[in-house]
Amino acid sequence: MKKIEIKGVDEYIYEGLCDNGLRVFIWPSDKVKSTFVTLNVKYGSIHTHFKVNGKEKIVPNGTAHFLEHIKFNEKDGVAHDYFQSLGADTNAFTTFDYTSYMVWATKNIDLCLNHLLDFVQTPFFNKEMIEKEKGIIVQEYKMGRDKAYTVAGFEFLNCLYKSFPVKNLITGNEEEINSINIENVKDVFDNFYVPENMFLCVTGNVNPEEIMQIVKKNQSGKKLNKYISEIIFPKEQEKVSKEKMVSVGNVSIPLCKYGIKISRDIFKEYDSREVRLYLRLFASMLFSNTSDFKNDIINSNLANSFGCSIMDDTVFYSMVFSFDSLHPDEVIKKIKNELKNIKLDEKDFKRKIKSRIANYILEFEEIENVNYLIQDYIITDDKIIDNVRDLYEKVNINGLKKIIKRIDFSNSTYYVMNPKA
Image (cartoon, rainbow, N blue to C red; front, side, top):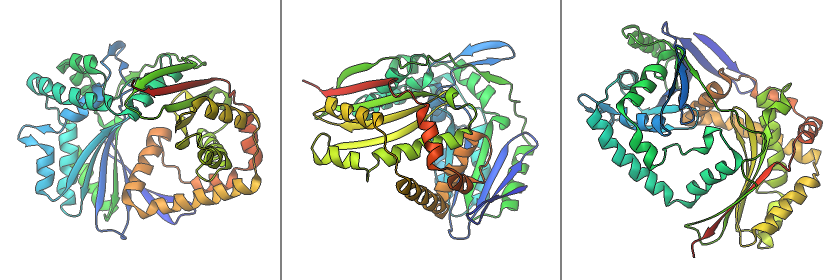
C-alpha cells in the first residue's frame, strides 16, 4: 500500500490496489470507535449513453438510481436485514456522477466489509423485482414533484443546459422509470459495476493492513468483468438554454434562481481545482452570509433568504444565486450591478483563505467527512489531493482578479417559481 501524507494536516491516507483493479482508500483514526465504509461506482445519472466494443447503448434516464434501489435485494432477503443483524446501518445514494453504497459499524467490520462487496458486486435481478420497484420509485418521483426546491432546481438546470444530461432528473420521470427493463439494468451492471470502475473508502477505527487483506481475499475469489466502456456526452452549447423561465409551484413567496454559465475552456492553462477555489472565494467574498450585499437585501426586505454557490460539471462551471423574494427583479438588478462593479478587498480575501484552511483541517475530525472528501478527490481528480493546504496558501488576490476578468457575466439565465393561484 501507498501511504499518502496530507500536507499541513498531519494525517495520512493509505491507497491500495487489488489485482482486479479495485482501488482501496483507508483513513485510520483512533479518535473514534466507529467505522464508515463506502463502495463507490463511477456511474451516475448522467451516464445514459455509452459505447461497449464499438456498439452504442442508451438506457433510460433514472437507470443508475433504479439499479441502486434494487441492488439491495439478495437471494436470501435484503442486505439491510443482514447489516442490522450485525449491529450496522446501511444506505446508498445516486448523484450525477456516481453511486455510493454505505455501511456504518462499530463491530463486525470484517463481516460488514465482505458483505458490502458481495451484495454490490453480485448480480441478482429478475423481471418481477424490477416491476415491483417501479411503483416504489414512481412514488418517490411524485413526492419529489411536491417539493418546490427540487422542482425548481431541475427546471433551473434546464434553463442553463440545452443538452448536457445534468438537466435530467436523477430518478427519471414517471415515463422513464416505467420504461426501464431488465436488459437496461443488466447492461449497466455488467459494464460499470466492475472493479476497475469502482473504489472503496474505509474511514475510522481500523488497521489499514488488516482492511487491505480482507478486501484482497474477498476480490481474489471473484470472476468479474473488465472495464471496457466509453461514456458518450452530447455537445453542450456555450450560451444558456433559456434566458428566462417562469413557472408555478408549491411556494408562498416566489422562489428565484439566477445563474451564470461559465465555460471551462477559458481556464485551460489552469488546474481545475485552483479555478474552483478561486470561483468559490469570489462567491464567498461578494455574496456570503457576512457580505454587505446579503445584509443589504435582507435588511431592506428585498429577499427573505439568499445564497450563492458554484456548480461544477465536466464542461462548465456555473455561478448560482438562490433566493425567495416578492421583488425578484430588484434582486437581479442588484446582483448584476454588484458583478458590474466588482470590489475585491485583500484583507477579506486573506480572511476567507484562513477560514477555509481551518475548515479543511476540521474535516479530519469526522470519519464521514473524510470519506466524502476522498470520494470527491477520486470522482473529480482521480487521485488523492495531498496539497490542498499548499493550494490555499498559493492563491492570491491578483490571481482571483485574472480569473474574474475572463468571465462573461452576461451569459445568464433567470428562473422564477411563482405561487399557485
